[in-house]
Image (cartoon, rainbow, N blue to C red):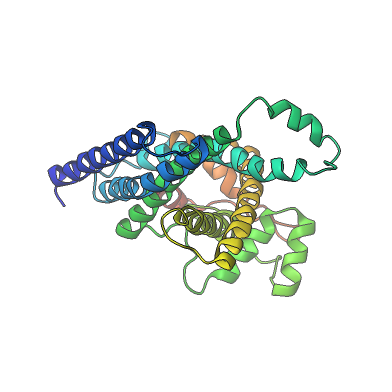
Length: 326
């Protein structure tokens, strides 16, 4: 696909999304429908969904067939492409907006019972001046950012075929062993026992992503995002298509479960990357120094007293520095 064609697709996607958003907002603000703000926002969000997903898919396709950035700049190694870094920021904005507002919709209902939980009345009084439809409105805005990101990364990985974050066939035991060695020893031992993992073996250096990222972090992100996307779409579709009651009930229940799982995953992600600061820097800038990355990878296997600290062979920098277009 040529550069001109790809740019044309992106510009067309932006124009269509802008036109769809304008029409939806114009209809909502015309006063033609006797809806309250909450119901009106529901319809606006439902109409905007196809445009958010479509624009994300177009941007992902554009990235997949586009310019390939350099993977090394002096001592700096590119771990993420510029599009992935921007995608991280967009997804972060979506999570920061959507998760707290979504959880409050359900937490507010729980605290509004006749006998609220301890401290619940304080929270209710704190947010009482804010109309409920504003929580829904902000939640929908954040959800649109998340859906854009899901479509963007999904289309990009589908076409680009970069599988650096996937565990290669036949290597799950190796990656699970590395994952067990990266978590606190108490949890690692409990994981290793039922799976019969050998935590005394010398592991090859992971490249370009750690065993924790491939065996646990990426699969968990994928599952949680897929669950919250599917259940969220089912909940939104009820305004234009009759969804059976039991399906809607389970969609709502699993949607809340996915939100809780994502909150836990965000906290786990921060726990892991803040303790390995070069990985956090790479997520925000795309670049990381080779020495800092080597320092992280050298400690991944976390050897015990039965063998010495592993070091990278002389030929390792080329492998470590290859980066990823993820």
